[in-house]
Image (cartoon, rainbow, N blue to C red; front, side, top):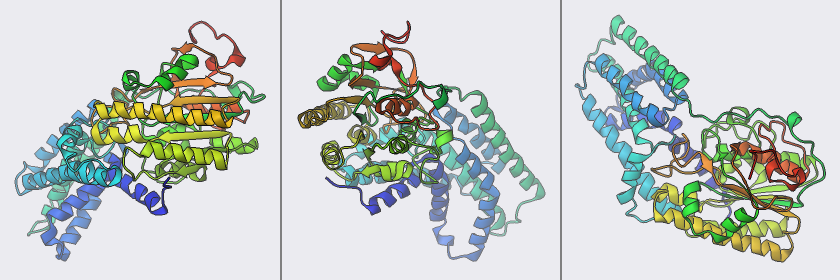
Length: 498
């Protein structure tokens, strides 16, 4: 077992600056511009011109930080880029060379540094991973820096603006006429209005938020379960789970209650999803809106807080990123190990936590499926094989719990936090394969052989856990308790399950 070191925790936060699309764009653009002008770095006039250019272009940097252009909306980014070309009077004066340099640097970063060097050092993929990764980058659709179809037009536009502005001031430039500056301001205003219109009228696939609250949920009584084990197979697509040879998990599903239309949250990023799953709140409420966390800790009560109020204990075993949201309730395992070892080491650590602490609630995040999806793609055999491996490991873990007597009076919940789409294991913008996740319950107090087809949300996990363990609901819970699965509530109304 290898726990995440303090260095790994800090390094994971630093990596998210480059991994998440919003912070990546300004960092990459400024870095690429400086590298392109490496011969000018010793000239004070260059730095003066660059400082004024960055200040003048700041509205565009802010606009692109505020607005992702998810899925097909990214195609509209070419419109302001073409407008910029008209504003700059074409792609002459070295702009085309700057663009080619920026594109080459971008593909070097994504395909070779990230897809080959980084994944080889972190999880042990082949030095030849680039032979597949280039295709994944071109297909990629989520909110990370690997989304070439979103990042390239943003990068080109921002590089073009910086190139034009510095050109106004260097090499005998006049600093730009009043008309030049007026056109720039109008262009920036136009990009803002254009982005606002797109997001206001065309971005229409976010999940509908639930409106329940603790006051509207069933009163919490005696605990249903003595212990609850939540087994999260990170990034597991629903359709690939169906294809996988996973006899143990599918037996639990058949003998328990399955929710066939369980929806993740938006954006479907790991830290965001876990924050919503274990607070019952949406990202706008708990404050975690990407894996790049500005302010550590969720802003609302978690299920772990609720358990403490009831004199109970809970632990979350997962990767270092989750500390940014859940703090000291996380036992962080290292994500720097060969992809064939990650899940087996996690199960070993889960057993150690049970032996040392025996918490009332234990959440176990298996990262192997998500890792291989990011490194090799979710539509390839390696991904399905990881799901099958998770099935065997979880069968071993639950069997071990039974031998210890821990399964007496215990409930198991199996789910994914999000799926994965085409590309570099895309998840964030709710492309095909991301939105609907496997979710089923088995064990103490759970109805057997039930299938619930009504749409539900992962925000229901936190209040359901509170109800099962007889703890107060987290204060910002927005989802209903999943009563269709519980024997205590008897047969549900028509349409709730079958």
